[in-house]
Length: 458
Image (cartoon, rainbow, N blue to C red; front, top):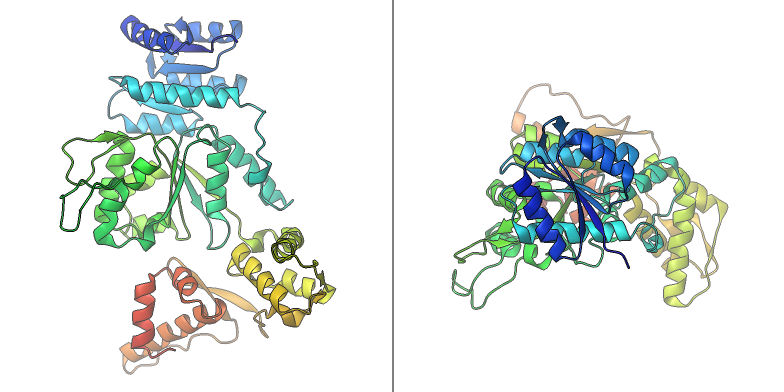
C-alpha cells in the first residue's frame, strides 16, 4: 500500500517544516506549496488525501483555495490553519466546506487527531454501507435532506438541526455521525432540558473526587465520553445562560475542565445540536447567547414536518406496521383504504413520532387482519384548523372558535382564560401527553404542571 499524501500550503518555511516532520512520523508523504498559485499547480499534478492551508498567503487566502477545491476536487478534505482566537475565519472556512481547522500555535496532538479523521474520510469514499442510516420517503424534501446529510457528514463543522417535535432530528444527527469519519467513535445524545441545572456542569465536564459534597469518586463528563466521536445536544435551547457560557468555551477551545481539576483536558468532539424552538427568536429574547448560536449554527439543516411530505406517509405506514408485525411474530394486517385516507388527511402535529405511535396502537387494537379507521383513533376536527402563534410554538385551534376580544373588567382573569384555552388545546392535540404538550407550547414540564395546577386543569 502506498502512503497517503498531504498537500501543505503555507508561506512560512518553519510552519511547513513542522507540519512535514509531524506528518512524516505518521507515515504520510508531504507535498509543499508556498502560495495559492503553487497550490493550484500541485493539485493539478497529483492526487491527495488532505490539504492543509494557511489563511493568509502572498497571492491570496485560504478561503479562496477552499472554494477552488470545493469546485474542482469536492472529495478532497481541506483544513484551515488560522491565527489563535480567530474564530470568525474558522467558522467562515467551515461554512465554505472546510473539513476542520487548527489554530496557531499548532498543537501537535490536535493536528494528529484531525489528520487521522481526514484520512479515514478520504479512504471511505464509497466502500461503507450507509443504507441502514437512510430515511424512508421518496419525496423531494427527503431527497434534498439526504443530499445535505451526505455533504455535511464529510466535515467537522458544528451542525444545527431544526424541525418540529417528532420530525426525526436525532435520526438526522445519527445519520451525520455514522456517514462521517467519526462513525467508529461514540455517538452521545443528551437531552439538555432533562438535566437539573445544578448538575449540568458535572454532567457535561465531569468532576474529581471531593470537588463538592457527594462527589465520592471521579466522574467522566459527556464531553469525555464523546471523545473521538459526536456529542448531540438535543433541545439545546433549554440550556440555562450560565451553562451556555461554559459550553461555548469548551467548543471553542476544544478542551474542558472537570469540576475540581487543576488543568483543562483536550477533547476531540464534533458538536451537533437540535431544538424544536426557533433559536433565532430565543436569541432575540435574550434567552440564548448570540455567540453560542453562531458557534453551533455554522450549518443548519431543516428536517421537514410530515405535513410537508404527505407523499411519504404510505411508505412510513408500511414500515411501521411491518415492524410491529415482525416484533410480535404476527401477520402484517391489511390497511383498509378508508384508514389510509384518514392518515393522509390527518394534520400530524406530532409528525413521524405521532404516526408511529398511532400505528402501534392500531396494530394492538385491530382484529389482527385489518386496520380500520376506528382502530387509528385519530382526533377528528369538524371545522377547518389554523395555527395560533404563541411566541415560539404553534397550537392548533378551530378556526370558528376564536379567542374572545377583551371588553374590560379584570385583565388577569381574561389572560388566565386565554392561557387555559391554549393549554387545553395543546393537551388535546397531544392526547394529553403532558411532555409533548409542554414541548408544543415551548415550556418545561415543570412549568406545565404548575400552570395546570393553578388553572385547575386535570
